[in-house]
Image 1 (cartoon, rainbow, N blue to C red):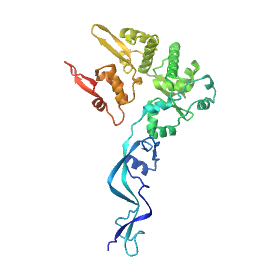
Image 2: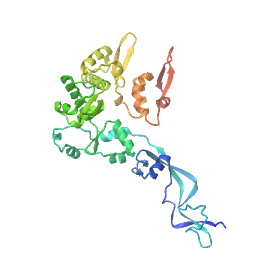
Image 3: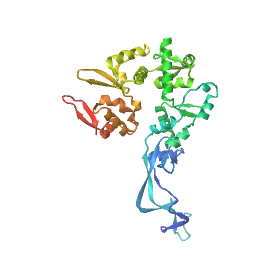
Image 4: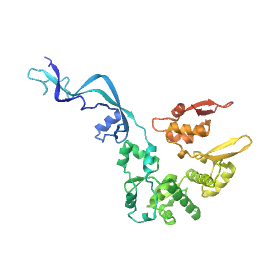
Amino acid sequence: ARAEQVVVTARDFSGARFRLVELNADVEQALRAGDRVFIVGEPHERAVLCTPAKSFFLAKEDTSNLRLLTRHTAWSAPEPTDGESASGRREIVVHGSARSHFVLQPKGPDVMRLKALLMESPFEHTPSDESASAPQKRAKRHKLHTTEDLVLALQASEQEVLAMLEQLHAFNDAGAWWLLSAAYQSRVFGDLLDAIVQNDWDCLAPPGIPLARLQAALDHPLVALRQCCKIYGAVVDGDGEERCTLEASKVAGFVARQLFEEQAAAGSDGDGWALEQFMDKWALRVPDSVAVSAAMLRGVALTKTGKGKAARVVYFPEEDLPLDAKQRFEKLFQVQEKWTLEQLEPFIQSLVVPGTTQAALLLKHTRSSRQVNSSERLYSRR
């Protein structure tokens, strides 16, 4: 005869002891693989569940049904189990109950917060950093951020944190993550370009310039020179030494920014440069191997044209725009009421992250219309 099944409560039964989480495939796979899975969050923050690769907000969902929680698994066992009495009655021991559970919602990267954390103590070279103990001296002067610190502070997985660090061009020195301050980065790379021009080095073609040669010519630490080479090009190993090659478009963009900033420092009224004048000045300032073109100003400046007026270029750097999509589009439409897709793209391409498309961003934040006698669309404020 089939055993009678009876639900009984355990002596340690609790309605508040257990929490239910509805797992998705990513978290289940991490648990089965024995990976580290943890929940992080301060009392004032939303709780976040992290695996080595992904992070998810925990969102509570209530239900009108009471769930009884048990460790019992032998629902169809043909033989009596430990929970059965001698009379054949099977007891199902309930250890807790729940009227709610948590679901997992993907948590997007927070690059803005990461940048703010690292810029609390940016990397800058001082005369006291010349010794071999420089990393230890910097550690005493600054607040350090290890990978684990950033995982906890950002409530993100390690892989997500490392991806954001790469996006920001952060670097690791003595176990801590750093960003070069904007002013220091500009100074180091400006001096690097001056050395390239003065020594007539080819910075674009392989095999590149040995980093040791750059360090010998400049009064900057190797770690800063290496990072600038990575930001504006690449560092590769060749003939047993690190070599620096630069990208023409990034070099041209840096020099263009210098010209605009020098104009602002001189008290310009903000109406930019005449395009023809700017192109001539720009071509003189870059290394001979770099050929400038107006296309290289994408994401750096806007070209303004008007009937009967010469074209002008106005400084409008993409990196100064808000990282939040809504705020960025608001800023874009404050500067210019209508944009073509070609004009918008360099200012919104960094917003296209996994799970988001350019089309979805435009649909959410803009209104499109067609130009008269043209198939080209114009995008304006929604």
